[in-house]
Image (cartoon, rainbow, N blue to C red; front, side):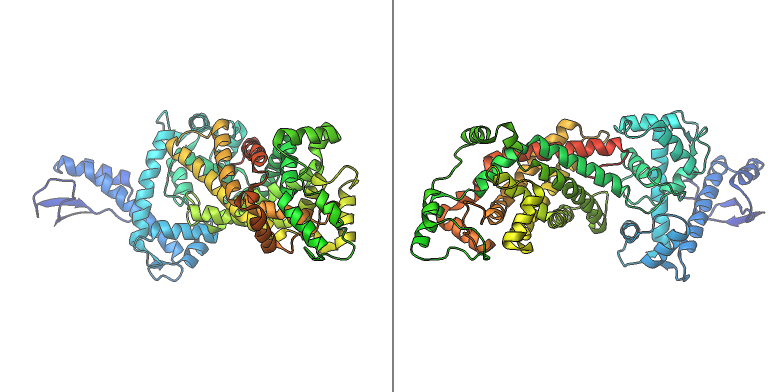
Length: 551
């Protein structure tokens, strides 16, 4: 199997051109070790050639392995891969095969962006990925024995702040599901097989372990990297708990905000009284709606609540400490599904939209956040209007949630349960979009600056407060219009508006720009801690359940 021939030297050997050398041509079944033995038996071979031939053989073995994988994926033997072939091949290999993951694979590997992957592109990607994986493997393999052991995984998790999220049992389960003995560890071949198609350009300890424990531990399937959305039920529970805790904590400020929002200005009510006395009709209403007489509207011209402190005292003197929590029961019932659906929808929509799930663009975050907010708000809107009416009602007007709902339906019909839905949904879109986008961006900035640590509670609180403030400033006028539409027609609250655009026009005409921000101060006092507490609780509950928050 030894044939003398003229051969240009390998690039790393400083040999003169066209120098006769001995080249080892192994039989197809020869291994790298047998080649090394053959070279060692040649005392006349140059020392550099002896050292380089095993490396050349290993490189040829790698190329052959890449070729085999490529041919398994290339179903029509065309010499290139399209998205359909990649998806079908990955499914046969038991690897992630969703449309999103296939697209991410195409983006990473298709260097010339022609919509297909050539063998050269695939081999180039595989070589670079294998080199990155070797560096990462050596970083985790602290004792250098060629195995990643359970204690080394624990140390790596501690470095990136994930040790509290993952139990020792999870680590053992992870190693077992890779098909190796957990008492020994993970060798590089297994490590490489699992992570070769890791759907992110960023190969780091933090990303890899998050990927492992979300896509392997969280499923009962034996497929190594199942294609799932991880634990939607856990995310629903975490979101519901976060919403309930935050709203209960800030209920007094929430009620004060709604009272100030629902309160029409002196100029507005005086105009209504004048128009009624002249025989005009300020707004259309269904038969049976109770409207105040003109003199009642005139007497109501002076706002009932003035200033935060005086308003809080009035609430207390009127109903005691329980008055601060009027409507909070509905708020608890409402906020659990609302927050849960919002967080779950955001996670799901973000996964569908993002071209690179490890680094979603701000536009993608904005769309996902807005859509999630609109979906959740529409789903629970009858409870939203019930909560608002209970909060602004006089003592004894409603006997509870069901009495409030039945009164609305009896007086104005079922459609009244959705009064104000349009400004509510339109308002949710900028609020939820800006809120989520700003929060996620701030968290990403922190992660890039401190890549080996998870954000602490204080960091999460600050990010949530800033994002909430930005969202409130943008969306508050729509929230105020929603509250006015929800509460008009109640006892002592005349029908003033014929819809969203009419409400905007009348508020602008009577009160100017500041009229759209009535009650915003207690809203900030409520919203900043409420949203921040919601994010903190969501993060902590998610960790306690062993899932990544994904935010």
